[in-house]
Image (cartoon, rainbow, N blue to C red; front, side, top):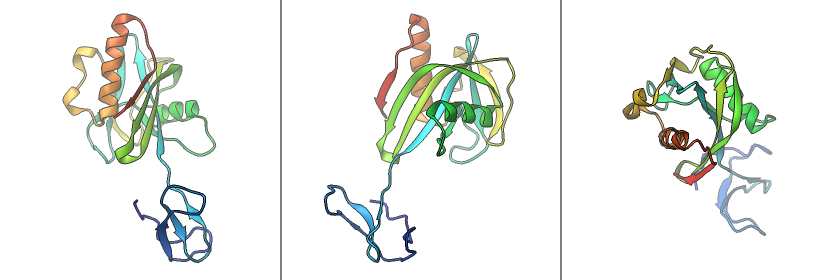
Length: 179
């Protein structure tokens, strides 16, 4: 377990320990002072595979990790928003693009980094887009022009491969996978 919590958020004590609380079966971070349990759960990444005609929209990252590499617009879900709202918000923040969601497309568990990717297919409402603060550039790519060697994340690579294969068949099933 990663003890990356230094202080109890309930009482402020710095006496934290890893233990299995009564009635639980997993090690947790527990405050030795007040007994509060600090759960650490996977982070949800919401995003969108954005299309315009026969092209997909990719963003070149202006932030770490993977600065300068290409990705789909996606990011961490915020409190008090739906997964659909998160995907649309991230698409606008990173690509200045407004999209209509066409359905849930990829659901990827990445246990080694405790992330869950939830990716939608969507299409541009208008051919209007540009770099947001987290993107160096935003561009539409045909299948032949995808910068496969410069993709930032495996989930992006897997989703694009699924998409181009599915598009040839004319069917877009939900892809559930552990990466």
